[in-house]
Length: 88
Image 1: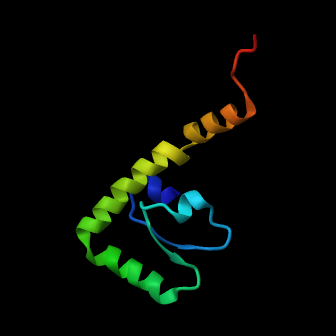
Image 2: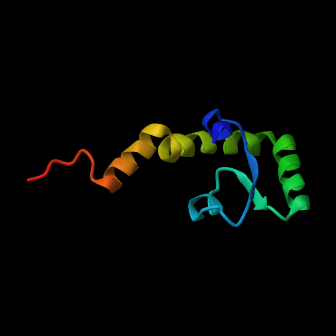
């Protein structure tokens, strides 16, 4: 998440505990944790393709601030808990 928040293009692996919102995300390069060759290829592609790296970095930062930044997390948690709603 730190890489995304700082607009770094991210290559990562997906494991059995990866949630669906990240599993289907298009703002980072992801391969299954068991796919070593795929991960290496993803990293090499990000290192050599400036346009892709720039797009992924910008998309990652935007996604982070829209979904995962603390104010967004607190908003969703407060909504789920019903905190801050006036009762009638």
